[in-house]
Amino acid sequence: MASFCWIRPLQIGHGIRRGYQSRALLRTAYLLTYPKGRHPYKPLLFLPTRRSSTSMLPNTTFMSSSKIPPDPQSNLDEVAKNIHDDLRHFKHDKWGWVLYRCSYGDDEAWTRFQQIIHERSRKGMAERGFPLEVANSLEWTFVSDRTSFDGASRDQLRQHFYAWAAAAEKTEQLRAVDNERNWTGDKSQRYIYFIQVDEEALRSVVDADPSDSLDEGWVNLIRCRDGDLDLDWRQREKENVDEEDGDEGWMMIAAHMVGPDFYDAIGRMPQDWYTFYTPPPGLVVY
Image (cartoon, rainbow, N blue to C red; front, side, top):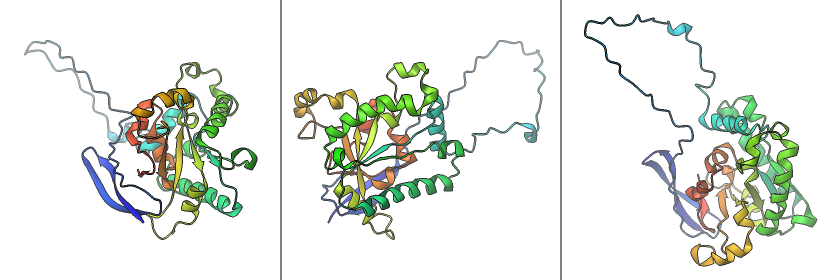
């Protein structure tokens, strides 16, 4: 049984280090990440004006705090706010990833896997007070087709996902059809990444010890950008990347990361991927 340490970001320059035991054949992996300020505060611009020492101060009006209109998002969970802002930005009504079933030997295990993903994410959002607009917009899309996906490779899944994503944004995000941002190449996380659940990942999740919070299993997060589909380019880049096949577009992530926190953290910009990327069999825990 291999072990490794991870560092979970709390504040810039601070972290908690813990030991983590995994049944996977993992090399020692260290992940250091920093929280991303996706919505930084805008600095106030102060422009002094010249006035004489005898000029009077302008009249000051004091307002009772009880009369200040409340900001409806002032107490909103930061992750919920980020997802809400992205939905508004894209004019989307759904968020969440597609999960491909690639192992078909145990239907009960697959059913249990889906329950775990649903229950964990829904419970977490409820405990943190996610607004219904965000919570009800979550959709994990589970894809199960033995003929097409039993033992499917990452590249086979990418080909299917790429075609699905091109059509899905038009059929499931009806308000976004006339959104000019669709033509800029800007995409939400739902149409950039997907989850592969092979036999090892499936068993790692459903056979985990529920009494051990650190024994939760993993899944494979796969990126699907244009470069990931270019096999010739990957062949040329093999000498410059850690993966033997030149594919840096996938990583093993802890199962609990199939949820709003990492969905928000992974972002949609190309450089965001390498904030977290660890070559398999290293396991990313955030």
